[in-house]
Amino acid sequence: MGKLEGKTAVITGGNDGIGRATAQLFTEEGANVVIFGRRQNKIDEVVAQLGENALGVQGDVRNLADLENLFLKASERFGKIDIVIPNAGVVDLVPIEETTEEIFDRSLNVNLKGAFFTVQKSLPYLNDIASIVFISSIAHFLGMPTHTTYTTAKAGVRAMTATLGSELIPRGIRVNCVTPGVTDTKMLWTMGGFPKEAVNNMIEQAVPMKRVGNTRELANTILFLVSDDASFICGEEIIVDGGQVNCMTV
Ligand SMILES: NC(=O)c1ccc[n+]([C@@H]2O[C@H](COP(=O)([O-])OP(=O)(O)OC[C@H]3O[C@@H](n4cnc5c(N)ncnc54)[C@H](OP(=O)(O)O)[C@@H]3O)[C@@H](O)[C@H]2O)c1
Image (tube, helix red, strand yellow):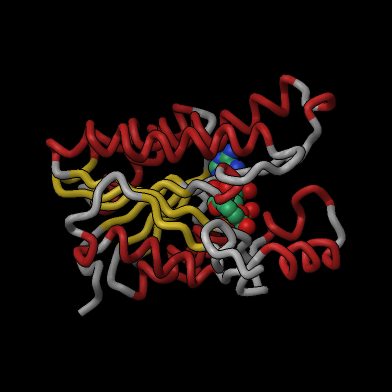
């Protein structure tokens, strides 16, 4: 029997990258899965791959009506929801002098506001024993030029994990956070427009394990946190980064 048999999970950004791998793993573990993103063609592709226990809903996490529609559609199809993964994210790497209000708002609105309202809009539909896993980024620990709007948002996501964790405990809802390091997705290879070689050099120098993480490694950690294996864990952050934050090798 799968670890998520009979459960229903909603994953924003479930049509690509880490979210897609998580949707795949959750389905293998017996869950009904609802994925959400802007690109309908990617939603259709992933739902076709996941099979009959999957539903796709198109929308933008910046739009609160889209989030309300997401949870309405999810509950109409599958009933109460047990798991929410506010995973949708974007990264803009821009020096402070060139950061426009539009870039600032986009980063904060997708990565932070989107995650917050994903949780808020889910609450009327959640089972009283439920699990939420935010996705932060190790960038919020590291001082890296040009990352300010992204790291500000992701530090906020980490902070929400503890505050919402304490606020939702009375309902039996556990809130935790997975914090990825460099992970093999479109986001990593397109951010900043750096050539692949430059990204590989950075990985060689900065990641003690000298490789990128794969999306399945991230999905495995998210699965652990939403499953009963983590039934006494709340407000916690698990870093999945090949040792980049905590393990010096020189
Ligand atoms: N890859 C890394 O190295 C890395 C490192 C640290 C943290 N993370 C975090 O991990 C999470 C997943 O990223 P990823 O690497 O899997 O990136 P990805 O492959 O680029 O996927 C991002 C997902 O978010 C969705 N999305 C983006 N903007 C959205 C919006 N406004 N509304 C709804 N959906 C939206 C995208 O779908 P649509 O484009 O169809 O909307 C896509 O499914 C993000 O929160 C990211 O910050 C990634």
